Image 1 (cartoon, rainbow, N blue to C red):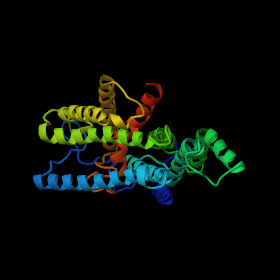
Image 2 (image 1 turned 90 degrees about the vertical axis):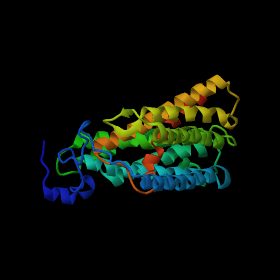
Image 3 (image 1 turned 30 degrees about the vertical axis):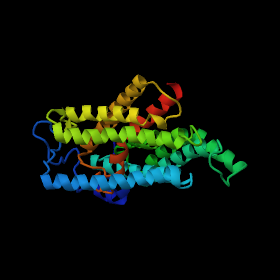
Image 4 (image 1 turned 120 degrees about the vertical axis):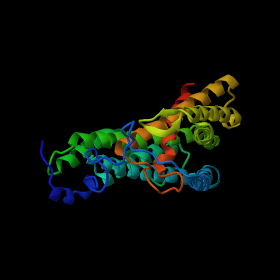
Length: 333
């Protein structure tokens, strides 16, 4: 395997991890028990400020999404979803550089944006929910792009690796690129399929999923802070507690029952409760999954874009797990 020199690192700045950030060989502060970065306790004032920031940021985000669903033209929904995916991919491929994994961030973001746009085309434009000026051969070409996206992506990222001056971390870069595209772009794109299930009620299905999932996050935060005593998985997230996890699942269950009028068809209460429990459980798994990635990369948040919440990926992590599962329940349940 080839070696990489400081000169090569400078030439390929976008393909390397910043030297000032912790890597596997240069760990940051670690917890003496778990061997993972420790989490400093927050003061009462810091907790209050964090809560206020969370409330303001959450209100603005909810207002943005609701506007695209009910008040603004339909085309604004895929635009905002593609923006979320773009920012989340930027945060993800920036995060893995802390781990020393060599990826081409800009290329990967473009590939993810292309995939998300193709899903929007297939789910919203081809069925006729949105008008388009692209007709005839142009529309046929877009359909071909959808059919060939993943094979073409594999070829493209291999070519990008072959263009590098060495083979250092080639396999890690290839695998991480495909994982990032599948984890963020593919999973989040299920929101388009949910929205397209019904021309008029599809927006309510999207809102229902967001409410059930994010109320689970609210439940985890509230019950974890008020009642949390037992750490859930200390080596992954020292601040997540068993009580917070249980509170999240209960909040999701109650929300699923309360908001049942948003669904396309009536559903028995026991089934609604079971679906709420399942989505709440999977939403918290999504949160833990992102915490696992952040812990491996030794960072606390994926970004600072949203005060009180961190980055976009910190906001949508639970939705990445619940969106495809909710779609499956609607289709096959």
